Length: 254
Ligand SMILES: C[S@@+](CC[C@H](N)C(=O)[O-])C[C@H]1O[C@@H](n2cnc3c(N)ncnc32)[C@H](O)[C@@H]1O
Image 1 (spheres, rainbow, N blue to C red):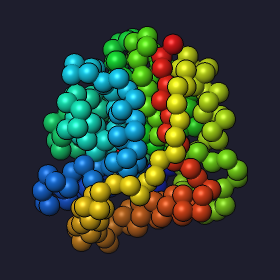
Image 2 (cartoon, rainbow, N blue to C red; image 1 turned 30 degrees about the vertical axis):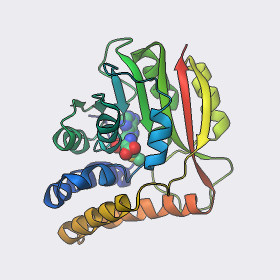
Image 3 (spheres, helix red, strand yellow; image 1 turned 120 degrees about the horizontal axis):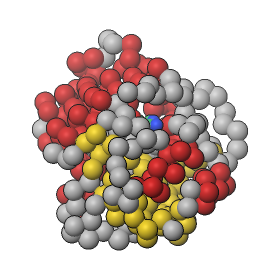
Image 4 (spheres, rainbow, N blue to C red; image 1 turned 135 degrees about the vertical axis):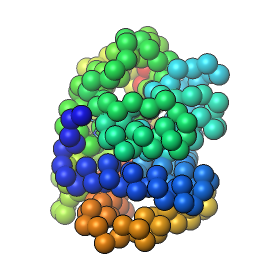
């Protein structure tokens, strides 16, 4: 499997994903969705996107760059679909399967192991900003969606140069760049919004914090924990300063 774009990202999305699964098992299944969604959006953002994906009972749905499967698990519980998770980090792909019972494959978004037009809908949350190969990711998403299929995106966009220290390995696009890449990939943007990352139910934060505390208790002396914490602190600071915006978009495969 191809490596991610920095060691810090390997720690954050690989090693810590495995530790998160371990902690969720210790604390119980109620922690799985909140802890699994920590790296991306809020419940409000997931709901906004899900409402626009035109999902029905038998919809074939892809979660591209699914992490440990929190958003896919939420979608399965809330909308009665069974998303397929694709995620390059083996520990995370395994966790998505074990925690949520969802089909999960270890794959990078630039080379998805699915036939053309395999899915009615897809979402890709917090992934475009982790790779410089954005055109290939969107082209693959277009390929695996049926004509008229919907794509939901959460992208952390930067409209101006970001003040350091920056999270390692990220490549935050501008909103204009995302719009141009979508058009070039044959994906027509229908609607956009800005996520309110603070609008999850209070018990989500409490449960996610408890999972973090459990991971820290077990692995707090491992340097990869400190590294992953520093990565998310840096992203958090850029979001709090308004330098990064959590941009939501829904596009249709044309
Ligand atoms: C911020 S996390 C978001 C995870 C999940 N989508 C969520 O919303 O909770 C970014 C994810 O993108 C994955 N990722 C990074 N580069 C990728 C690529 N080239 N193809 C697919 N996934 C990638 C990482 O392994 C990580 O799981």
